[in-house]
Length: 69
View (tube, rainbow, N blue to C red):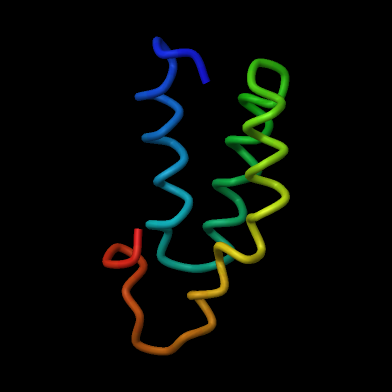
């Protein structure tokens, strides 16, 4: 990610893991993918490859996503 776009991208990326539910997190990831897939294909590929693993904490009970991210 170029320096001039890092803050914007990072803010939207963090929104994935602060979503209240896994479904909402996946919707946010999809929106991010659609928005940036042509500008930052390598970053989006990394996100897609690791998304399932990074969302496993939603399966845990009594875990606040805001405290994990």
